[in-house]
Image 1 (cartoon, helix red, strand yellow):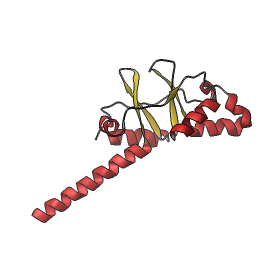
Image 2 (cartoon, rainbow, N blue to C red; image 1 turned 90 degrees about the vertical axis):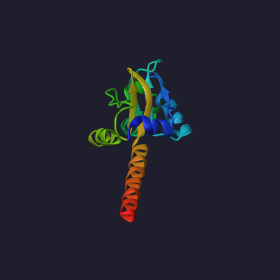
Image 3 (cartoon, one colour; image 1 turned 60 degrees about the vertical axis):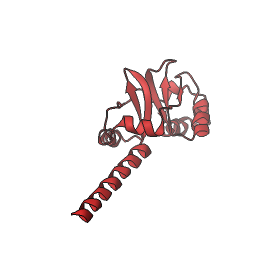
Image 4 (cartoon, rainbow, N blue to C red; image 1 turned 180 degrees about the vertical axis):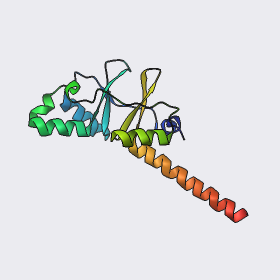
Length: 143
């Protein structure tokens, strides 16, 4: 199964902000849309960074409430790992596990194309395992 199949099922929407926006704005967007990360872009669809709930917690732990006035660029992860629409579920699981993160932007032709979360990947993997188990049961029943 590929990332493209996941995106076709869940959609291509990605919530973004610019690097000059404040963390307070990012917190509002995360809460409003009930998501765990925002992809940071510079007004185009080129990925400049990613900001997760964990990034925000780290800055608040360091700076207290004043952290909410911090520009996103000072809290985001700038070296973003990405995947592509042809990446497999196993590829994505490996990248996420190795990097210890839960959100992976999808890039196509150097531009933001979508995003997958660990929840999306686990859901797809469970569906695959259940389908395989059913196929094995059918095979045994007809053998």
